[in-house]
Image 1 (cartoon, helix red, strand yellow):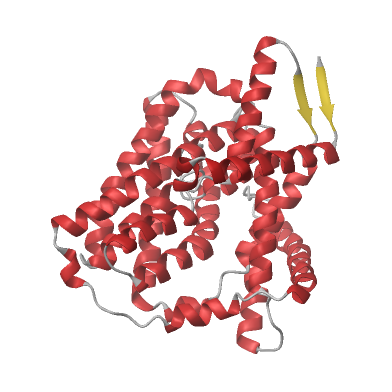
Image 2: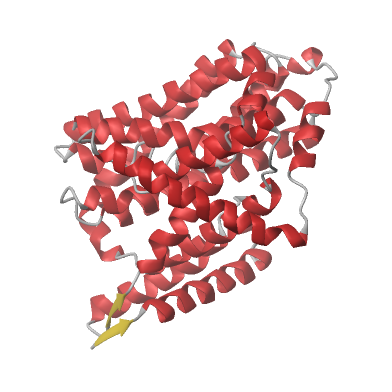
Length: 395
């Protein structure tokens, strides 16, 4: 029996699985602990249900996922609005060094993924499904680049990327805290703790205050950026390279944000834009998760496990030996290690949860709390998209 769901029914089921995920997350401790997104929890359960229906021949579901792309573009446009050059300047040398380390990590994740896939005799693009797309990118980038890879005849790329992103979320949350704790205790780093000025954090937080009467203006700013972004996307296609559909909107949003910041002629409603981006991400993930075809993973179970285990080893070695030493070998560097494991294998909320656990046990770290959200939320997705695009076109 084939069950065909239209655009509105698909969106309704996405919202239902989102609500189910939220309900379960509040009641199951480890889901909350590992910061697993609600749409991933509910969506995965629904995907398992559709997989059982398909495997037993009971029913085959077909979805109209038109709105998935719309929600995806809205979310990544909200990310583009985060790119504030004034904040980048204020972060100084530490921010530049940390940004350089994140770029190195993104490149290494993709080199490892491609190299390991060649050793295992797989298509390098299947390897890319376990590189920085799901690792630094998380579920958002996994859902965005999965269809791009499917256009290159990689069957089930979205499912592989999403499975890898879910693995990354859990692994990043499990290893971040213990790595940071080991560094602090082994090297007596509590002696290096210094009280720091947190005025920059407070100033940036003020820009993110919400006003209910400004949500309409925020929606209009997002739509304008998306419209302007289509021109940038069209210009980028002229290069002959493959870019994700949202890249133009991200560039447009970053331009609008910085023109507003530097000219002072208009206000960007960042708090409201972040909220709307969050709603769009939840809906996008909900639709992406319910349309997963888990049966496509069966033949790749062992190679996928090997590829993902190699990514865990890479981030442990990179953060412990490279990042810790370059970022100053002090308490702040150890907290950054815990945070990088979170967003280098999952998402910025995981990074914040890892750092929160360390800081609650030992001492606050303003430097880490400034750098991780800045790089994780503002620049990582942007740079990651460009690096992934480069690799895909190279392969």
